[in-house]
Amino acid sequence: MRITRVVAAAATIAVAASAVAVAQTTTTEFKVGGSVTVTGGTKAKPKPGGLSFRFDVSDPSGNQTPPVQTYAIMYEGGRLNTGLLPACKADKLNAMTTPNPSACPSGSKIGAGKLTALIGSAGQPTSTASPCQASLALYASGKGHAMLFVSSKLGECPVALSQAIDMQYVTKGEYAGLKFTVPELLRHQVGLDITVTHAEVSLSKIVKTVKGKKVGYIESTGCKDGQRDMTVTFTDETGAAFPAQANLGKC
Image (cartoon, rainbow, N blue to C red):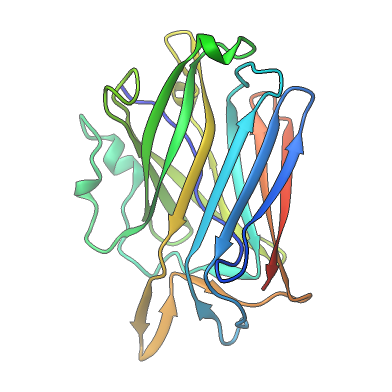
């Protein structure tokens, strides 16, 4: 049995501090934060680094929140060189009887993390839901893509989870990041809702030499105002979007 969803990437400056932003609907509160391990750089002379990202989703009244359908994690003043590493495709893993990232090419892994979810009924007290802990792994997936792999074990979750999700690399103005939509079967199983309440991911600093030049998978290109911002947009199953933005300090 497979199920999942989560996030992946974006940031602030680890050398300095960690930022948190909050967005809130009438029933759901979204908190986001993260860090970036590098400052400075320009588009002509970028600087490689790593980044981390986290979020929390909750209902202040103590009820289980509705599933999020689409996540878009965007950060200012940086870029991903998605074609730099060997690719591991989500559809290739999901075609396996039991998806296993050990089938991914050596050197394709870009990060790791974890998530906490509730399996129950949205709108009902969280005390009536079953908790689930899952591990996250991120892989390069070819130009314009990354891949998120979610897995859990019995004892940490009511079911053993194993699922790959394709993530699209997107840019908008000075922002760049990853966007992905969670399939229906990963938001609902056997009549129950799957709600991710916490996720955290770290993407490693990876540098390769291309034609005699050092190139980072993640690169800082600087910000016009010297400050790095991050925006995470959570879109629910009705199509309503809820952005949460954080200033991450010096860029």
